[in-house]
Length: 319
Image (cartoon, rainbow, N blue to C red; front, side, top):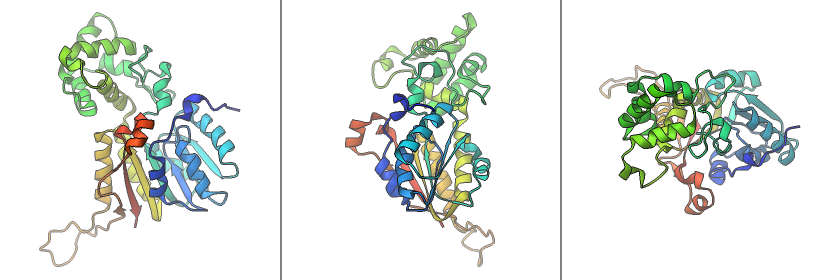
């Protein structure tokens, strides 16, 4: 049996807000699309009880093993279906689970703290390790080393600027290309040094770690995170039962923008010009947005759990 490692006991972000948003009850079917260490799922399982069903999805074998152990210990008797996969393939995964519909769906986006904390995964700019950053190494042939060493300068700059919102993207990309011409950049430490060299000294002295935005951008590129998110959200809306709710926790503006857009598009009714006497488009809203502005963590939670600092929650209900 897998043991629950300390790495997978990180505190779930905005737990109470998630539980209140999803409004689960005894007998509900809930799907945690980003299972991780089951921090949210343990509490959701308790709400749906032995008459309900918890579906958990993760592409990380270590997370699935840790979650299974924890749920068996802390939510015994609750029916479980834990599935390995990416939530971008939600249609296929839920077909495999053989459920007719879902009452509550949670997405807790971004890379989990345990993945960041394991040096060998290559996500962290604090530890020197091989450049990898794949959330599912067994099914993703593209890793960070390939991105850094094979993408041309213009593509590197675009990724850093768009996915990392890095204002020194051009300089960093130029420095990466210069260094890799001398020898391949193969470790996170070497990438950190290249990023630092591309950022003016004055800018490096303030704020977060200078490589934070670049590492985020490369991780998003390696794992196709934004494309996967939009595909997963669209599928989630289709699987929700009437009155079912979808709750999404995002951690940066790119994710939040996609969530906001999908919710807005699915909550729109007729889009015909106002001068038409009758509707010709046939567009019918499928969602009701419940968060006009995203929910954010309290100062108390941020003090206790720094990961919550940038978290935003958006919630919608299936009509």
